[in-house]
Image 1 (cartoon, rainbow, N blue to C red):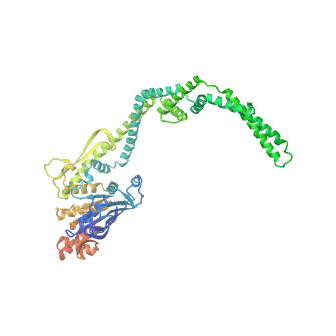
Image 2: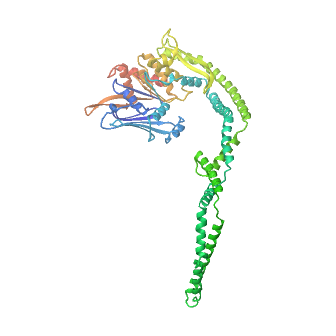
Amino acid sequence: MIRSLKIKNYALIENLEIDFSDGLTIITGETGAGKSILLGALGLIMGKRADTKVLYDGGKKCVVEGFFDISNYKLRSFFDANDIDYEEDCVLRRELTPSGKSRAFVNDTPVNLNILRQLCGALIDLHQQFDSLDIHKVSFQLRMLDALAANKDLLERFQELYRSWRQEKKQLADLLERDQNAAKEIDFLNFQMEEFREAKLAKGEQEALEAEQNKLTNAEDIKRILAEAFQRLSENEPSLVGQLEDVLHSVGSLKDFHESLPELFRRFEGLVLEVQDVAQEFEKIAAETEYDGERILEIQERLDLIYRLLNKHHVATVAELLAIQRDLQGRLDAFGDLSAEIEALEARVDEREAQMTKVAKELSRRRREVVPGFEKKVKKLLTQLVMEHAQFTVEIQGLDEFSLTGLDEVHFLFSANKGSRLQHIKDVASGGELSRLTLVTKSLVAKAIPLPTLIFDEIDSGISGDVSLKMGAILRKLSNHHQVVSITHSPQIASKADAHYFVYKKLKNNRTITKVKLLSKEEEVRAIATMLSQSPPTASAIDNAKELLSLAVEG
């Protein structure tokens, strides 16, 4: 419910704050004082568009803040889904700058207007003439009927079955599609696998082949150069090894005559041995190396196959190709005979449909059972509100397919005038008629259905005092279970208030501004008396006002 509303720099409002009662808050005031301005400001935090024309001071920004208690609205999932911090004391804020830039916030988190509208749709039910009210919606009409029929638990059971049924139907459709496409996919996978089977790839094969290819294509150079190196190191006269041995022998004759020479001799001796070993390895490699044109051709053909597969599958290594091969094999292994699984799932779907049909029929029976009493009560209350010729009927049509609410579609049919054809509410009811019908129907289900804050704007327009008194009684009854705010010109309705605010104008620095005042009991008497007669009110009007207030207390 809405706790309070703060408005700065909007229309005729410089700075204003209004608190709302948990029950019935009444707003009255002089014509043109700014009651509709309050709704305009409220519309900003409900996500309606605005421009800089609404700025009281064109050089400052407009700020409208609404403070809500949302502890009973089960909105945590909405906050989580939109990445907004959830607080039971929720603050909605809308800002409009002189440049025309608009910003919206929920608990100081910036949000777009669509999120603001969705959230306010759960928090505020604003009834103005020519608004598209939720009673227009077939889904809401059915919800009201289910509330009267006490269908909550039964409907939850049906919806649990329905969601499981939908999920199983989808699984069955997917399974049937998989079965139909299995043969085609198996053929395609086998075609790809056959390529891999023929290739007989081995891990590290590409690198080994490329190394062997390099060796064989350079075989003649390897043989020639290494043979020449062996000759120069060991076979030529004088050879490098021979010269090194001569140096080793000469140094060896001196090693006992200088303290550094023994270590140097050992190092040099190792060097000579290493050169001899290298020369022998050169000779061995040269002897083993032979040019093999056939093997080079084999290697190139094999590498061409590997390169083609790498390019086809958009990978860089044989290891990745082997991973693809394993994946293909896994997918092939996953295919099996789906007929048993399909048969079992079809049986579950049939069983679920039988369960749903049983529950849906019970829902329908209970809905139809409460319709006559509901129609009778609506007609009675509409008659009290000077709509004695109004006709109201609840039409329940059976559906061929299951919906989330069963096998019924509910339509409220309405006619305001005698002899007129009953039509869907959205096609026939005027703004004022729709407001009264909404008030009547919602008052009848108030105990059974969770409703947001209900705001009624001058639904008493054009009705008599006696009817206003009855309308006030309906509002009062509705406010016993829900927060209700009513902007009214009717003293009879105003007398039912838990909190009565008076909207008035005053001059400040040669400018008109709108102010709001919470009336004391004495001030409320005078305000209602003024509404009954004139300003200042007559003594009899004051007595009448006191009588109205006493009736409200007794009621």
